[in-house]
Structures are given as C-alpha cells and as structure tokens.
Image (cartoon, rainbow, N blue to C red):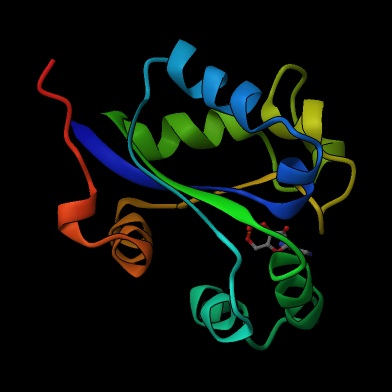
Length: 142
Ligand code: CMP
C-alpha cells in the first residue's frame, strides 16, 4: 500500500552538508518528498518527539544532540514507505548498518546517526502529525 513516513535528517548530517545527497537516495529509490521543512528543535519539541524513550539511559544525550543544530523534517510517500525508508537508512548503529545505506555512509556513532525514520505505520501517523499540518503535506498528482 502507499504509505507516508516521517524522515528526519539529523544535526550531524545537516552540518556535513549532505541534505541533498540524502534526498537523492530517497528520490532514486522512488520515495517522494511530499512535505519538507528545516527546523531547530526546542528541548520541549525534541522531548515530546522521543517521549517513548524517556526512561532510556541515552534520552538526555539524544535530546541534547537533536537540539544542537537544525534538522530537516520530511514526509516521504511511496509504496511500503515505512519499511522502504528504514531499509535505505540501515541499522540504528552505523557499525551494524549494511554497506551502501545512509547510516553506513554518513554516520559514525549510534548517537549521531544521520537520520531518523518512523518504525511502523502507527508511529509514522503520529510522527508526521507531530511536525506537519495536513495542509502542509502536498501529495503528488503527477
Ligand atoms: P532514532 O531512530 O532517532 O531513535 C532514537 C535514537 O536514540 C536512535 O535513533 C539513536 O540515535 C539514539 N540511541 C542512542 N543509543 C541508543 C540505543 N542503545 N538504542 C537505540 N537508540 C539509541
């Protein structure tokens, strides 16, 4: 089925100036960018986004990193978009990420791992609406 998923290009990848290279991978794979915005997250916005990780030992560092510089939040649309996007990203820990994936090519550590992607259609719905009004998502008609 055609799905939407949320993508975040994290502060490390923005700082490396590889926004376009990452977008190219989405586009070459057939995923369409239907929503896009650059934002410097507040602590409150980052904490709310990652609320499910609140009790994890890495939570504080995660929020500090995600607020350390601007990110690019995007809505990607395509067949099986949630899983397809996760395949393109590779494993959470770049050390485990398959060759040719975004994390293998652009990330060094699990904390600064270049990109985030929704992990299920249910979380995709929550994450897309956390950043985008429906009117700010632009489905492709051609
Ligand atoms: P992300 O997909 O954005 O979701 C939560 C983030 O926490 C994850 O990517 C990693 O960057 C970071 N993180 C740090 N340590 C861990 C860990 N042990 N397990 C999962 N995520 C971690």
